[in-house]
Image 1 (tube, rainbow, N blue to C red):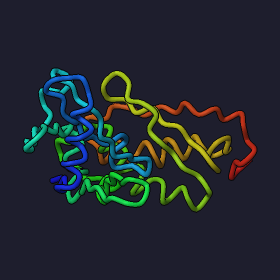
Image 2 (cartoon, helix red, strand yellow; image 1 turned 180 degrees about the horizontal axis):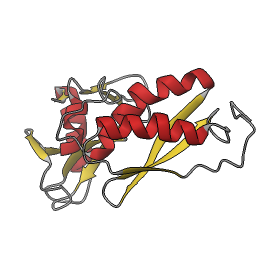
Image 3 (spheres, rainbow, N blue to C red; image 1 turned 45 degrees about the vertical axis):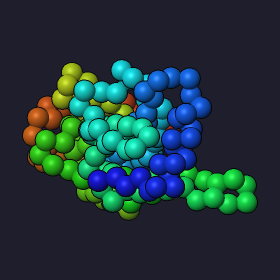
Length: 193
């Protein structure tokens, strides 16, 4: 899983010691894991702020809680600290944060994003289009938003029903429907007008 180097541990311990909270640690997680927008984050974690399902890593001077959902995306991740002329810099390298690490028990959101980014969007790219997951409603309905050449395209209904929805429904057990929330009145970049 994630490695926090000794220099990074020392730096984080110093930061934590300046906080006015006994037992404060850190929490490591990834926003939008498995997508091009993925961002690896480290935040202060006061006692009681960690989640029950978080995985605990114990270091000499502090505890780190790793968000369960982020664990597969933090494989081979390294948190390091390097001193420089300006003081120093904490770096986080998480080479798998943007790559989908999908298992059968992965959250529905991750499984949908995996299919969108690896199968659907490469097909839409030939028309300058893209589709992204906006939300999941009623626990199993994907709410999608089209962009680029798909926004306002005269063929978007066919793309949605025969392409995107069919692909998602065939490959993702538990998904019960797909909805489009795109404002298709803007036809400026539409592939088919």
